[in-house]
Amino acid sequence: MRKSYILWAVLWWCCSCWTTQAEIFTSISQMTDLIYTEKELVQSLREYIKAEESKLAAVKSWANKLDDLTRVSTSDPEGYLGHPVNAYKLMKRLNTEWTELESLVLQNPSDGFISNMSTHRQYFPDEEDATGAAKALMRLQDTYQLDSEAFARGKLPGVHSDALLSVDDCYDMGKTAYNEADYYHAVLWMQQALKQLDAGEEAVVSKADILDYLSYSVYQMGDLPRAIELTRRLVAIDSSHQRAGGNLRYFEKLLFKQLNEMNQAYEPPSEEPIQLGTYSRPKDHLPERETYEALCRGEGLKMNEARRRRLFCRYQDGQMNPRLLLKPIKEEDEWDSPHIVRYMNILSDEEIGKIKELAKPRLARATVRDPKTGVLTTANYRVSKSAWLEAEDDPVIARVNQRIEDITGLTVDTAELLQVANYGVGGQYEPHYDFSRKDEPDAFKRLGTGNRVATFLNYMSDVEAGGATVFPDFGAAIWPRKGTAVFWYNLFKSGEGDYRTRHAACPVLVGSKWVSNKWIHERGQEFRRPCGLTEVD
Image: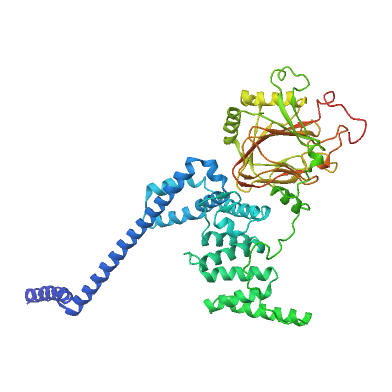
């Protein structure tokens, strides 16, 4: 009886198990479900393949585009980066677009590419660099009175190139300005983005996004009628926009309140497109801004025939200096008072090449000497990279130092090191004095060599556009000429500062500007440049 029970139990268990499995494979309904499941899996597989192919096509497109770009850029790196749009787009490309490509590749691990990206990422520009490049374009726009269209279409003065800005580029420019609360430039660049988008150019950014930034920026510029018109366009495109409706009601309420207070009738906004000159640029910290920028454009120069007749050229032998007797230096007057001279053929191409070679590995953000502490620090009004070279670095540096001493008759034993500076896109040095004023007595205290008595400035490159050295006080502009140098005294013979020598390095519009300068100090000049009888001798 016991055995029969156990056998029956085993048979029941086996049949139960078999029946359970058989129900899965014999159910038509379930089989149908599996068919559709398999179809979904195949569709999913095809979508995956399509995504992979799309990604590969996108990467190939990137590679082809960058192949063409790098072929052009590496053929003449300085010439390529000398165009401000190329420099800006390089900053933007490495800061934003390469990151997007990295994200695309990361969708399916690619160890070789990611490893390469990781290795080079430390050298990529960061957000601050990209913002700085955008601000440089705006600085050029202001100084040389260029509208956004000129930049977007590569139509810079004397230059026409294929370096164009897309809708998205213009939008990013405007957004950079907006984030800095610079609504003046935000309006100009958002308007350009809208113009190109309306003309049919393809873009990632939507018209609604552009109108959102543009309308609010126009409002911040005080143009309520146009802000209302732009916001209405935004509402027409996207009636559910998060801010548009509220902004529109606020703008309309504010406008009619102003009209009632001034007892004026409503006038529709101008149908003229927003462009350079539609709104006034806000004033900034620099009192001579307009004079300085006009000189950079070659306007407002105070050179006239009477002054020109007082300018001469001559051979300079450094007061019978034995090194200059057989080969004196050609000297030309650039200005009569204060006296500024230009020396010709001061540096050879070989010497310039060696100085650049020595300086390039040491280039860092240029500094200015803090007038209160005497410590070197960076400043927003000086945008360049510089390096300091000693006579011991190379015989060329020692030879250049000696040449400066021979020509000027001033000792360079107490001078500062030879400073080499490279001004790239929008590079500038706003109006400043080379000497320390009475309210900053400790500026050169650490050096123990007195004030900067004179400046010797070597031009080591020609500049296609921009980059002049200007003197706003008396309306002079000196343009870079490779291999030449200019020289002037910062102090009168009495040791008093000559405030007329306040000068500036204009932004480089197109090209790369290389200079080197020697700041010569007072100590050691007692018998080489004796004191005068009056304060302004």
